[in-house]
Image (cartoon, rainbow, N blue to C red; front, top):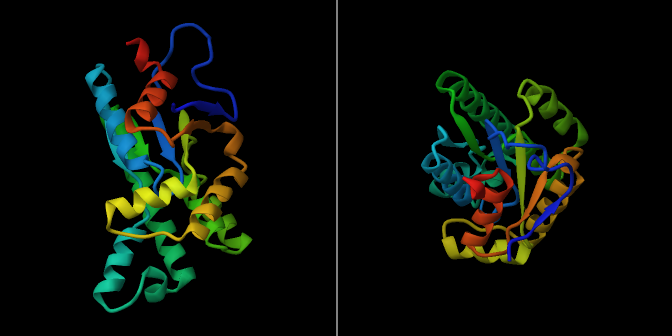
Length: 218
């Protein structure tokens, strides 16, 4: 079963009628199901009458990797270097989040976000960036408000790697997946996350997410 293991106060604690959050972020390591679940959750909210939209806040690493292969390099870091890749990723994710929040303000929609600022902080830690790199990123990203709720999709690295291999268009080493999982748990924001066990089936994880924001009562 997909169980909820909460690290901090849940937005669904008993306090009268539930208010649907306007910004929902799904974060976690590669292979945790962020993109799939964010799309499904946005569709479920829309079907329930909420003006929700899926928004991706990717950093472009996947596309950097594809570009690297096209020019004869092994991956993005082989093309741009580790620091260069992390810098490009930070800038592109910042621009994606800014666009998402602007759209939310203009269209008055519920933004279901695939990744958010904490993904960049975790990426920096997992890739062994120096502390000043994360400090600089936090300085740049502090413009953005914290989402109303941040779901951390927690998945075993072995399960994540199997999913990545199954989708067939990229790879991640076990060492990196473990480092990324540790990085999320080490973030100062971790106590504010609502942690969802994402090792279960697609339906189980979706059900747990819907329950947390009250869609199971709609």
